[in-house]
Image (tube, rainbow, N blue to C red):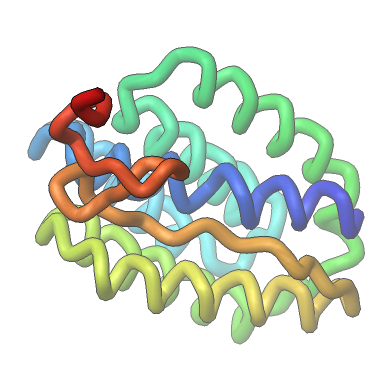
Length: 160
């Protein structure tokens, strides 16, 4: 479980930020449909978890990177049998709906700073729920602000 959560902590922010950059209104609307599906079936934990899985897959699809989509789908498949270990009551489902709604709002607004904060909080909650500690994280930096490991920006190799 700790390895799955650590892997999600590394990959999922990339997927969410790419979805925020690349997602269309229609894709965000389809993601929103999964949140409404969770709410519609709030008393049925199985349906809530199915809709949650669809939520994450649709975000990965909106990221427009088929390799990340396959990687995330594999991670979610491995998590599926473990979901029974989580709280499956209505209170937990309502919390999940609220978190997912805030994440979607940040993606629609292409607000990467807010998305960072929300994702960090989400993983802290998830790690506490499963009593694991994943010491890794990834932070989104737009290409214009990024520096390469060598300290060069986007301007290319140094002149000799």
